[in-house]
Picture 1 (cartoon, helix red, strand yellow):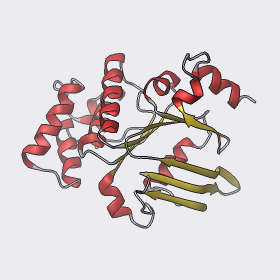
Picture 2: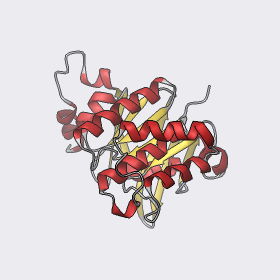
Picture 3: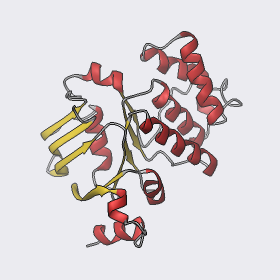
Length: 241
């Protein structure tokens, strides 16, 4: 069976700068995989390569066995991507935005309305739902972008800094949703600076530094049964060497 995400010797160069180089990574279905690194390490570039928004300079990316750059349409049907800066159409209401996204995925009728209602209730969005997106705070926009990404029950979910702008209650809701999606078989690749989130929810952790992987292992193996060393301590130690 193909891994949900398979990266082999991946490299991306912008002019003379290699944003990522010699990157190999496998993410199975049903796993939350945290992708960590300092600013400029190459995390966002890697997610964009997986999503098919950038083309590799070298190496390969496969999503469910398909090349996202060349097989965009079938990949789009099974993958959702939440970028680090949420984008919504400002003149739409939140309700219209979610219906629009559902329509792109071929969803309609009762099943779509039930999914929209589910996320509106979970993220407590009812008071904003019929107001234009341009009036929303960053946190509210983030909740709608996350809801849209999960609406179609993707097989692969890429999430870049999902906790930015979320209050503690909404962060808890998102963690529970990500775990529930993984338990249903979704592969979640989560890029975050919030190390406590990675430590809490991730099954596997990969650390990237200066465009290359410096550490990758199961969370339990990295931190040990007694959690003698925190993820923060481990992260700082290996990225400052």
